[in-house]
Length: 340
Image (cartoon, rainbow, N blue to C red; front, top):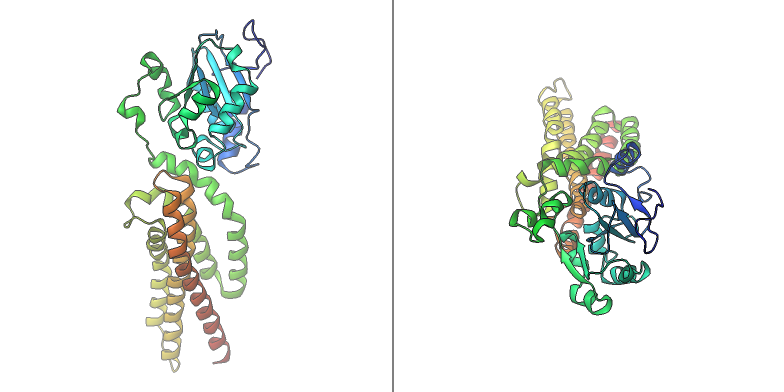
């Protein structure tokens, strides 16, 4: 960005609709959780193109992906972009947290002297920011009218022709591509604990136990986002338990196969020991996957804050009990094997 003067009124920092390699590299790092809270744009008012006092004012968050999605969708449009201080959080999440909200919007219109920049009284906000903004309060306190644009920034050029959003523009989508885009940051967040747990279990109980840790984590962070709409039940926790059980099944079947193949004088004790191993997988893996699945509620459009709270109180104790019993059983099996 440069600090070129955009008009004869106040000097404003300017931006363009063209994304550079540095911008795209920043997006890549953000998607993989590198310097997670440093992907920010300075709050304030930016000139896009060569705006006049009659040009539209678009409002967004100071998360670089939100800012860049907006400006890159406005090729050929002259306007202003007002960036709110959302502490580096995207519009939808910031609206839920209150940082993309009435107070910050009113404060930013005053701080940027917007009344002296434009001759109209309209602010175009993203639809997903509506939960944090009281439009009538904004108008009462700032004099500006809030207008909600489409869900996706790429629909803005068409929207600007009539300032009327079609039903398709209002529709919130969360398809496979969007869900898989979120998978890397979910995986990165738990990669180190997964690696430590896998190494410890490899040393204590062998490669199968380490593989079970990796499988349950990958199921919760990668498979769950991909399969989310097709897993039965409506709760993320129970969806996660189902997926975790599916991930545990090959390990349990493998243990059952070894039980069936047991022979010799100690065949019966050995068979029961392997059956116990299979039960351990079925007890320990599903709650790990379910917990990670429950964590994904904050990244989707399928949940509400009250719904997530209910799930936490209802299912997290179940997950804890399952994991605790599974760990106790595995320790007991190790003791039995050692002394028999």
